Length: 356
Image (tube, rainbow, N blue to C red; front, top):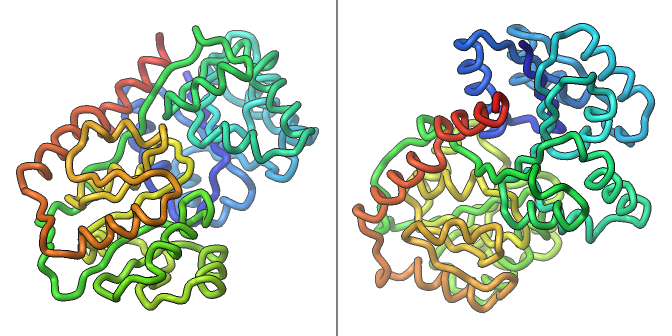
């Protein structure tokens, strides 16, 4: 039997997503099940992709207009013809339609919803909205939907996906890649950490507004790409914010920080939030529905979505000496993550859906 992982993912850094798939691949291999992959063309030269190519088959797909390009469908027909695919697992929506239409009879089709479907749909063109409704309506009839967020699953159902074929599957993190060290809240230089890949979605503009009139008691290191750097250079006037490019070892950033800022307007189920908690950091977190799974954790300061004043007050709290987190709370959070959000738990649940 062969599992086909179809991933609309081409980021330079593999992150938790690729790490999770590779762990799943190794576990399946021990059970005699082979995994092959399909990625967008632009993933081809990434180091992580080259390493996968050395071990197993990797196919490459067009990205622009992939849902309606004939070449996309031809490639999937070739994949199915050349391999005895038993399960096809499509991540990040882009290839859901061609994966399903071309799948031979008897192939189990899984769609994995990672991102904020409602937000994406709301911001789409009329044509794209029609295509999305067709995708989650007629075309979805032979698929099972795995959603990292119960909120996104409800919206998929609203678009027409059969609720009996929807499963909630929270992400799992590789806890072994996070260094466990005691957080020093009394550092002379206090740094906060935030990821700003998507300026609006991640709330970088909210942060800029929050620090505008603050004294420089804390430096917020915002990790992002060109879009984020451009925005900060044009809109940020505070010396509190420092832009950083992604680093190969995330532990470097966690060790320098005393708090993680997670004020997104929309999310899937955030790997970064779980990692930061496991690293022992307190969190300033927006109260969007996708983040509320974290209410069971400790050391979180909740702020209203988009509320600049609340973010400012939260930063003032964590930069003062009044708020000290306990080692007991950090241990509690780590135990909970290992039990419910570890990669081992994710693999067990994933295989249940593959083989049920």
